[in-house]
Structures are given as C-alpha cells and as structure tokens.
Image (cartoon, rainbow, N blue to C red; front, side, top):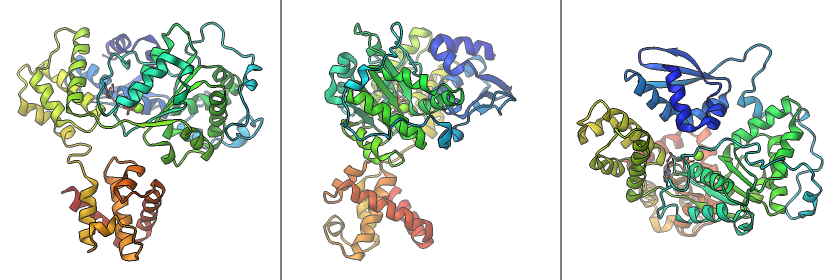
Length: 475
Ligand code: ADP
Ligand code: MG
C-alpha cells in the first residue's frame, strides 16, 4: 500500500520534491481507517501537513477506500545522529553561531562594490542553489486571476520576466491570510524566472527551511558555505516570513537581505500579515522589508473560486481521464466554500474521491460531505460595522462617538474593544481597521489590540464581557 502511494506521489510531485520532502517519510502503522506515517523532524511534519496532507490522504484513499485519515508523526531522535527539532532552532545559543563580522548594518551604508569582491560564484548554472524544491503545479498557468489578486499577480509577473531590472518592486512583499495563493504565486515567480534565458540564480526558501538549513549547517560546521551559497543569487524568494525566529538567524537574514538589496538583486517575500505587523521580527529586518512594495491578496470571489475548481478538474483529468465532477456541483461548491483556496482544494479532493464510488452524487450529499468546510473559517463574514454597532450599543455610546476623536474614558474603552474585536474577528489589516475607525493610524489600532490583550490576562470580568460581545456579533 505504502509503496504504491509513494510511486504515485513521486509521479505527481516530481523526483526533486519527492526526495526532498518524502525521502525520509516512513510508514509507522496502518489500522483499519488510519494511516500513520513518520518523519524525522517537526519541520518536515509541518511542511507535509500544510502542503501535502490532502494529496496523501487522497492517494491512500484511492488505494483503500476504508482509510479516513492520514497522520504524520515525528520519529524520536535516533542514537548518534541527533536530530534537530524546530524548538532547538529557535533558541540556538549565540556561541554556536559564527560571530558576525560586523553588526547588521542599517540600510544604505554600503553599495554594490562590496559584492564584487566576493569570489564564491556558484559553478555551472547553479539554478537551484540552496532552495526548497518547487512544485510544478504552482505555475502562473494554473494561477487564476481576479480582482483580489490582480495587483500582486502583475507585480509577480513583472519580476519573473524582468528579474533584477524590476527594482521598482524591491523587495516585493505579498501578504494575505492563509490559503489565498501566496505560496502558489511565489513558486510561480521562482519557476518562471529560473526557466528564463537570462539563466538567473533563483532561490526559493521558506523561512522555516532557511532556519532549518542554517541550523543544520551550523551543526555540521558548514555555516560559511551555506552563507556563501546564498550570496551570489539574482532572485531570493522567501515564503512564510512570519516564521523567521531566533536572534542569530534573524541577524544572518538581515545581512543577506541588506547585501542583496544593496546590490539590486530582487527579493520577494510572503507572510500572513503586512511587514509592519510582523512583530516577532527584528526591527531592522522589518524596516528593510517595508522599504519596497507591500501588496495584500484578498479572498477570491465566486467567479474565481469556480474557475479554480474547473481548472483543477481539468488538471485531474489529464492524470486520469475517467475522473469527473458535474459542473453544477462545482458551482455549488464555489458558492458555499468561501473561506480560502486551501478549503476549496480540500473540498475538491474529497469530491473527486467520493465520485469514483458514488457516481450519483447529489447536491444534498455534497452538503453532507462538506458540512465541516462550508461552515469552517468565517461562516458568516463578520463586518466591522456590525462590531461597531453591537459594541457601541452594549456600552451606550453612539457609533458616531466611537469613530470620533473624543478621548473620554467612557468612549475610549469601547472603541479599543471594538478595534480588538475587529482585529480578531475579521481578516482586516491594522491600517484598514484604522481607516474604518475614523481614519486612525495603524499604530493606534495596534496599541488598542495590545492594551485589550493585556487587560484580558488579568481581568476575568472583561474577558466574559468580550466573550458575550463575540457571541452577539457572530449570531
Ligand atoms: P497561501 O500560501 O496563501 O496560504 P497557497 O498558495 O498555499 O496559499 O494556496 C492554497 C491552495 O489554493 C493551493 O492549492 C493553491 O494552488 C490554491 N489557490 C489559491 N489561490 C489560487 C488562485 N488564484 N488560482 C489558483 N489556485 C489558487
Ligand atoms: Mg503559503
């Protein structure tokens, strides 16, 4: 069973992706309905869970329809060869790291001259220097354009085509909540750029992978060559920036970023929030990331969701022409599964699999199967206006007062609570919430959210009040 799944998986993702992510995947146990697999590190587990669990589940289910679930475990460290866990990566002690030659300098202190002295150019085409492997399914060709991602897509295309000459978007920072296509877009940039005639050196890395590689390099006394390998690249693409943690790692990253940007190499970064909201990040890294262009990707509308599903079906049919889902079911799914691309993908895989032994899948049956996805995420989109209305009614202030400039205590507190709820109950960014509260600055919103978070830790009465408000708002 596991062998067959491995062979099919390799055929789908390609040998590079397979050996990097699944080479060390082992079968742990199979019960009637659950398959347990294991990998050596928590990093690999979270990577596979986030990106490939749906696919793995589908493959196992196709081999054996009784299987309901696939779980990934982390194997315990084996003797001798100590495994690095992600917790160790984040608190790597300073002495283990090569001391930096110079403090991570502020922007604009040195120019490209520095770089020219560096002799360690990658041999050959050096196309995939140190990066994570790319998944060929994530290309521009399969990316659906719509109002929610048009700007990000245009910027991504420009960079993939023009390479380093597109310095007006440097660094390009793409942010959105989960499942809205950031990774897809970043991989498309890396794929297209590395296929271009300019033969640029392209590196795509997730922040986690950067940390893991760096920690491994230090363990193997190889940090210098790892750093060298990143020095002479033309395009650096970093995904999931919010996960970059650890002082020494951030320090190294800051060096790398400065060096690349100062020598007009293109950098593209994605994260689940805007650069100024990446609070765990070193202030210098953050400020450097803010120096370029930040573009937010929003949730896809109905037309886009339908198009994503239709294209997926075409792709699936290229693999296996007997697969099919009637279009009215796709329309129904696109209308009801609204939260993210990832849920859409999950819904699609599940239906594709079901259809193969329930050829007469009715809409009611689809609802039954997808109930958890239809209601997941934001069942009813919470609107900032509703939050303002309900909070102001609860505290007997008017909505006008709430968004006014008045700073009376009786108004300030409800206002801060409403801002806090807006941040935690909607996907809106700090600047957007600021705008909706009478054109306030994003730092005011940030401050309000922190303030309420702090109070919630001590004040159980307030905690109950906010719970009550939450219920009123989501009703
Ligand atoms: P993120 O990195 O923002 O969390 P992903 O890039 O992993 O999101 O997208 C989640 C899934 O949804 C992927 O399978 C991706 O291919 C798909 N997806 C998201 N947006 C689009 C789009 N605009 N066109 C095609 N597929 C998309
Ligand atoms: Mg992603």
